[in-house]
Image (tube, rainbow, N blue to C red; front, side):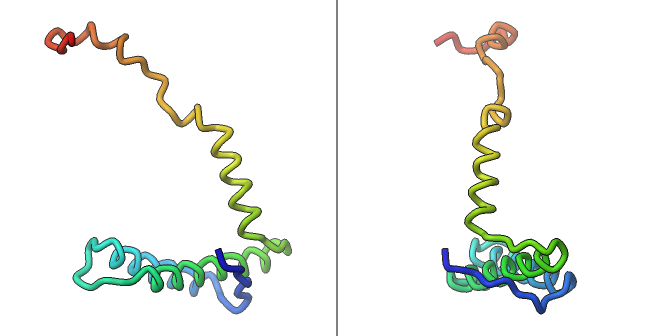
Length: 105
């Protein structure tokens, strides 16, 4: 990931517009809801712009400088710690007997 510099010039309204534009590019890149296409470079550019705006607004409102790599590592760590919580704790063998025509093999 390239080093992103916070964008201190953006407002919340500009961020909302930027996120909408990024979503539009994402749909074009995926080929969904659009007749035109977008490249991975277009998507990367819009994503980096939105993240830079988020970093700038966060620093403006909290006074804390956010480092993307640190934030991602923390969030992924939290998710990994709770991975078992997100997985269903269902044993299908408990429910198979309730289905009379369930294949036995």
